[in-house]
Length: 156
Image (tube, helix red, strand yellow):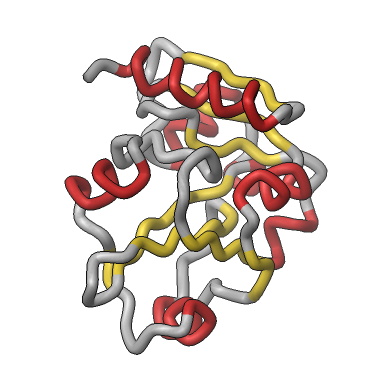
């Protein structure tokens, strides 16, 4: 599948969910927070990362933290009610979320979503836009409403 397929799929989810969100496609990679910040002309603190973790059964937990933060896997596992979480491999992420790593959005698919409390301090944030060349700008409260996430402390 190409980038436009995944981006179109996410735009449909935004519409279906009735979200006030801005989807943008860029001519450059937005895979990393640094690349995304350069594309938008914003600071890393304006971005969230969607870190995919998996348990021993292959269930995925999406941990949403600010761009400059790292996920505390032990805290995330405790909150998710599993013994251990590890970084989910790209093929599992695509299978479970329907989006490739580097473009995984913060909503639009069934998963356990954990949102770090620092994300909620922002008025708007940029998140994955379905591909490594797209981003979505959204208010954190709308993001949590869309994904049914639990706001908690999951950063190191």
